[in-house]
Image (cartoon, rainbow, N blue to C red; front, side, top):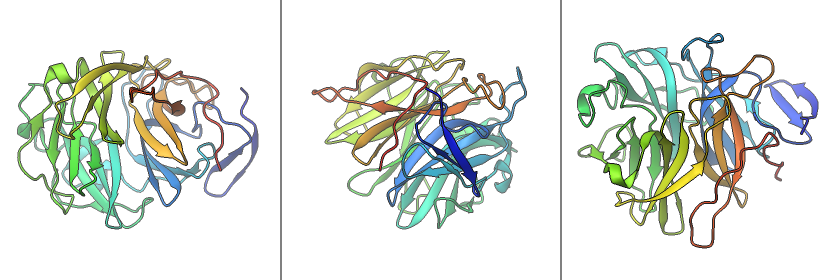
Length: 316
């Protein structure tokens, strides 16, 4: 389906009569992490800046917003790895969550003095920033996680606040880690746990938690090139039951990295692909955000995602 552009206005808003995937085409946008706040969807992405055939080059995170899931307004870059004094660079995947009027952005980047990837947390009074380092140090570093010997297992943080107000953080590569967060949202509360491999079969990275009714859903990337699988539980801490695939691999991309939200009565599946045709050719290191509908079966399991070039329709 051809995307019909009615015009561009200040703030980089594209007005479209219909949707299309990729959903954002002004720059490359990887690892989408959507949230809903005050009837607006905000999505937090890393900006892929690699030249064709280069490896991951990501120097900043970006924010976009929409009230109809089709027209996306750019709010620029309110946070960069250089905003963390402890970081040596690389704007890998992160996630923003709101608590008590403040917005906490859990990020992934390289650590200057502790070998490997690390997770930081920034804070803002606005979903569009500016954000600043909330701690002055990394929240999780590679020397804190020993379930695997790799130096990049502390990536892809995803926060979740349960119905009782308790906040949790999930993250990982090869191993799925989780920990309770203190009420200040900037400290771990207790030990780091590892989800047993048999509960998240084939886990690669990109954990994401959402809840529907009394069921918790833990979705994540499996294999490489990646597909998206999920497990379910009646508790945020498990045990988890593996349920199978949600999505096959993303087109022209080794990774897919999902985010799931409900908005105006509909569930949505955010991911990235390498299918940007314009202004530059996409690929595994030049990814772009896409959106599909997500539907459930009567028993609460998730129907397989149909990845499309049409995307989703505007909502009011």
